[in-house]
Amino acid sequence: MQNPAAPGRRKLYARCAGAASVVSCGHKRRGRWRGGTRTPRRAEGGPIVKNIIAAAVLLLSAAAVSRAADGPKVTFIGHEQVAKGGSLVTAPNLSITMAHRDMPGMVEVHDKETDTLYVLAGSATFITGGTMVGGTVTAPGQQRGTDIKGGDAHALVQGDVIVVPAGVPHWFKEVGGSIDYYVVKVIAP
Image (tube, rainbow, N blue to C red; front, side, top):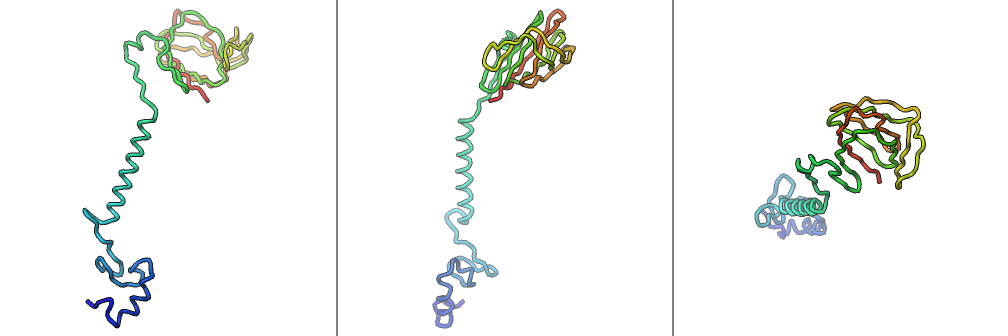
């Protein structure tokens, strides 16, 4: 192999000395010549590119673990607590309650809460929609009333699920003995 500093190659080498890479002019410096490209010089343990990729993966993994540590927490409610009923979970964006009802309730309208009811046992006539009668504000974003004009009747029984979007009047008008149900409230900001 010819020395790059040899008289016949000196001029060509000088022309490419300012280039970003020896590959651009086809000359060999350090590394191996491979079909017009230059293999990167090897660092301890493997090619430089592999080391850079490994470092990037480690940094991204550390960032992901750090975010996960500060992220939302899982909530577990044991069966003993669930059997007692009442409020099971309360958070800024949701609540879960296990309820028992043996008589009709009042008409409710929630400005920012979507209610999802899952019937565990019993039955009831549940009215949704229409217009609330005798409504009063009981708390910010909460109204209670005495009746619904119009609306749709739903005969709820064990296993039924009904979703009542925020702003829709709803009411347990009649209860057949009793009804046990979960209420999951998703609360809009």
